[in-house]
Image (tube, rainbow over all chains, first blue to last red; front, side):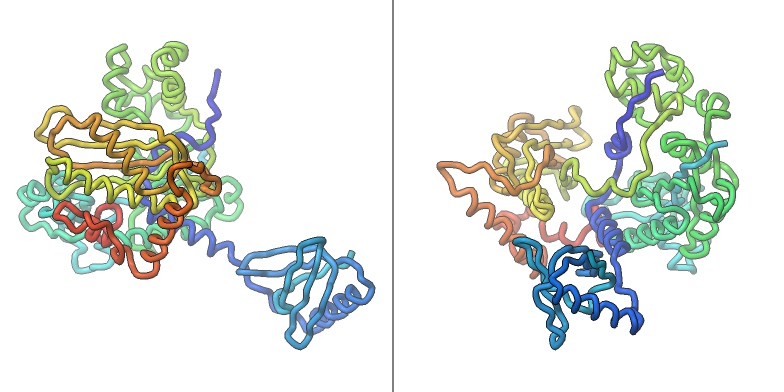
Length: 111
Length: 409
């Protein structure tokens, strides 16, 4: 018995879908994937502070997990500047440099 | 029984939504119909009470009123129906993460893995039905099967007629239930195909299922193979919620308010359609290389219309260029008969980051012009900037901006 593997073609081809429906469905899906920052405990914030200070002084690389535009992001690099007054840090990896606000971070992994 | 895939279909969707919001109409015959003055006067949805008077979908409004003089006619509210459809998707997503909307009132769900949480497939189907009824006051019919094609046919041919609105179609009962049905009831067999099949002696789905595969492949290639699989209840398609991330083609179609007879009138409509198609292509940063023109003649005429396509010399999403080709294609095949509806589709799409430069015109400038127009429309409304031809009597752009799917929002 020979069966055709056509992925979802049978249904894509026959689908009756309004463009407006499609757009609104995509917006809904995007919204469902939105992430909000978990509330961090005080000792956790303290630990982050310590890990960042250490990474800055020892010039050791870290992995930062943070939330930007409601999506989870990750970046690995060296802490170049830690601005506690405006609460942000600059992290660099080769040519790439990112400015990350401290209240966007939810995990720091020292390497 | 392997009933992992469900097709959930809403009974008389538009009419039921209206009835759920107008409780006083609960026991009255209600239909949803467009404006007869603008040629949208067909029945889009009829509630079960209206159907008991012999009113079917797609018949003209005057005919429906003749069959049932006390009929309550409501105007469609497309945005409302879209909102309800999205709520439906969200309800189904409570039962499984694999939900695939198939149309505004039909959605597939794959419940494999959800049994330990919600019970047997039949119990899950009942729970889905009850939840939808409780939260949206709508009645759902559910076709169950081991794959999508059987779930769809279970819903269309059996669940709608079954007293509890749920039916399972699988290898156990396919020969007793599906195979005796006439060939035109097979999913994917339209009017024309059923005639072809009948000509070679295939009259029921069972006969199609037992036909030699090489013969079907010889006549209809891949399509023949797919039909043979459908008749035998085989379908390997997944239920996926990713199916909307890629575009196969971008198309728009409009039914004209009256028959357009002159090339000037038709050009106005063509330009507006090209603008809409290109605008949507630009929104997704896509450009196409194939254009399809669809034309349907007035019903009184004999030939029906045509559907033709043409290749562009390079990928494009510029209105003026697409319009030039659409015009060329249309007038090559138009036989001068009055036109009732017209459609344009751009396919063979790819991202528009790379463009073919031209020595004789400034392509980049035209590209930017398109995007600038889109931005103006996005900021100030769809009708804030229009082609001058849209102000002619044949222009539809202003009225179309107030509509979804050809009906008022």
